[in-house]
Image (cartoon, rainbow, N blue to C red; front, side, top):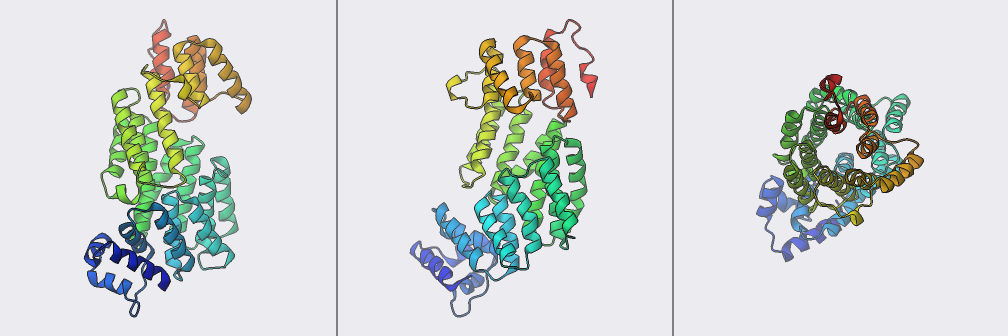
Length: 393
């Protein structure tokens, strides 16, 4: 870390009357270590994670200043390990611009982290929406064909990326199988931050796998494992998503539980500022709106910008003209209707054939949980009461 940077932080610490002992408790080190951090004559090198915690304490009132200092630290550090941790950290908090800067530092200046930068480039392009599902899986295979990954962490991370690809491809069984292989491998990672970071991703995958597999008890238990730990401070985005999993798990049981957990997730995101927060809030709001429509709670049509949400509301209200217009628009844009959209159409027309088609699509995707939508409606409209529908799995 550059001397000018530590001098600036030291002045801020003094002006706010923050004691070395307070910082030491926050970093989990001795007060003497903090003294050495700020001693310009005997300064010892500070690691990336300690630097993050340091500026969170000294600049707890300024998100933008902390961002600026992180950029300066990453631009000036001479330790490859710091940049490795910074890549993971920036991805976990959703700071795509910082991650891109670090990747470019390692690739363009031929630093010793080019292997890590190559793998994190996949994650960066996924976050930017350039690689998703099939294209993401293809990109991982291309990287593995081009180079043999030498570090244990990157061999594990490439499997994590494949896990994301399977999820986006709706291949939930493949995703779930891969997460089971990762558990023991993650324990072999020596760095505590990386091990915990990879573990929280695995837990998130388990929670999602259980949810879509309709194992709601396991989904809730795993989501609460993410929430009820120190992950709240370290991995806020993942804690918020765990609340989202909990909310979804109650979609067909309790509107109040959905509302409660969505609000819990939004509350966690209030303390985080990154490019991914806006997207996550949008996803949570979609679940909330879906729940309101499903449970016939009051929804203001004027506030709905998403066509799928508006279609659901129109179908629920029986507004065929408006719903048909949206369906035509969606089919023209995407070439076909999704499982959800076919369900909405079946709901609109009370059409058991459409509902069965939706059910089959959810089945193909391995999504047992949301298959409840057409199942519930089929039971309502079928003369035979569809007694064997649950056996479709």
